[in-house]
Length: 302
View (tube, rainbow, N blue to C red):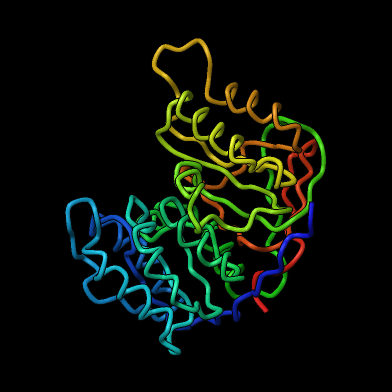
């Protein structure tokens, strides 16, 4: 296995920095957005992208509208960071148009469907932040807010995270990559899959029954993903149980992880759970699956 690529960190933010809120994926409830904006505005100067509240079927406006929001915020030298309003669906529709865009070294924060944009950024050698979207931020514990601000503002590595279960013992080091399983698996066979060689793979999801988790995981296996990565970090898998089944999604994931032989720990507070601790993607980490710890070896900022 060759050495994994290196990624460029972003410039550290300061309190009062000007940040943009964009909606590259699905539409959202105004009240949930306002709650998240209250948290963000207490720390930074917030700029709302034009047409942020647009809707088109299951999207937050047309592809052209959402792309314009994203590229304008990325190219504006006065914008220091981008926060996504919501996941849902739609970000991957923008990937072909983003091929000609050179992303600036500024953080993009989001998760779920935003996994597609994280993949694009990592393909361009950039660190990004798998963390709360605005419609989730207001519901989270203030300690998660503080972790997010520290990650964005501090050149020191993020605080380690603790999981709850060991699926396969062992230790793995490499850049953290991945996100929501359903989105990442849809990038297989496209030019937009993030660089996975030598990576520690993060997976989480919501609302996917065990057989669907199995199908998506098996798709990754058949595509050779688990021959390329060095370890697996499993975050929250929320609402993923089959009705009246005599097995759990955790049992299915444990068996799938065991078949890879890779170090794997589960239960990290990342993703679609009651906690969604932000983590930098592209930063080198150390997974100790027996101890169920994820340690960040470098800071996200530079």
